Length: 261
Image (cartoon, rainbow, N blue to C red; front, side):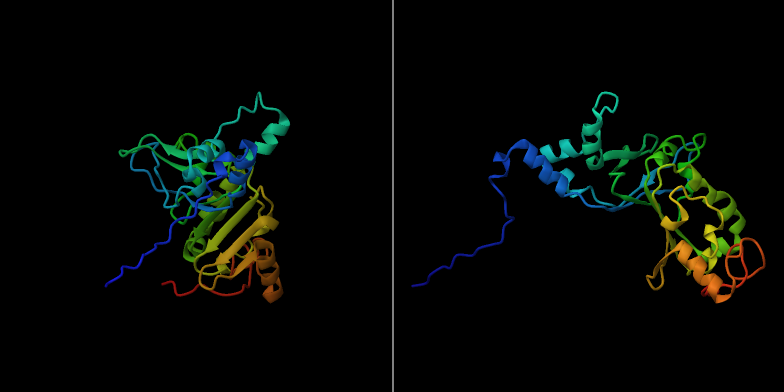
């Protein structure tokens, strides 16, 4: 006689008593599920005047997809004019909001879920900082700069070396308008050389001690102030406008450009 064995398949574990917990405890658990993310927000050169569409491949935060209760709690709007200071202080860090909406796209309306208290906004290499700071040219997105606390973007050495006047004198200066900026992360796509001396002009509301540089080739991370100190020890790099050579505004340097022709 042939016997048939029972085949079991793994299933997602469900905490069935969870809905029976007090509401205050449930929302506290939802808040504990939050974690800092790096959120991609790429705004390309607009094809139409006053139109710049956001592109993001970052998934919707998991807690917002768990159930209606978690979604409603973590996206609930707060009227700060009527909320008590205690309530506002306790709730604000947990809120997600729809950001970078674009109402002029030929497709459906686009937006990105962002928690500005936790998330780092990564705009990549193709998004010009001007897209987030010009109310006349890009009215849909410039207001979000006042909420960004952690900003990350990529830059190539050749762009800094050959067009340094634009980057350091104009584009980098746009950071002054990010009033709530607490951290700035710059990915140096061709090494650190082009960024020596970046702290000579303090365009960073977060302070130069909170500016981080990343070498895309080897993954090294260093504070901008430490890079400048290292360049000075190596031969006087980052001298604030004197001499030629390695980095912006200084003689000498750590290394030259890598393989750009």
